[in-house]
Length: 257
Image (cartoon, rainbow, N blue to C red):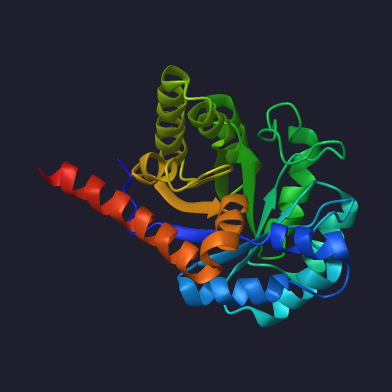
């Protein structure tokens, strides 16, 4: 079994930009949020530059790439426009995600098995530029094997179905989805992929995912920004950081006993 040590926490700052764009002007500044996240214990910053620019802007990406002291993970669709932007700014990582203009948020994983011919040249060009490539996928064996064959170094497992089951208090579905995540993490790590996870995670749903030993990084955004309205960004991120650490420490202790 591949067992990572401390799980990295990537903080997605998209929805700071959502609030800014609702009014126009420069406030609140997502770059300021990224700097605060770094000070509070985040290990990386994620930003999704969507085709419709509904939150993060091109200028945000330029500033994040230039000003933050943490690795930048650029979430992007596999389009020529986004490839050009990624190759221009050279973020630490690029996470390829599905994107539909009519969706409120990303609705599921990228179907790399179906779209492998489209994705292969994007992945190759990003890797050749020294950018780590992550594919946001559902926790399915076929997706993991195709992601590996395409040359991606990382996969991010979509936790949205698991989190939705928790919201619906459907314990059976939640347990089944957690098992799927754990099995996919083990398969992916066995292939040599680095395993990340994210989408919809909260204080309550994060611990079981963080306890999966193969997971190296969690990417969390919307929930953290929502909680920050009430508790402040710094204490919210610090609390999530502690929850993640406690979950991994508990898992290690259980494994040793």
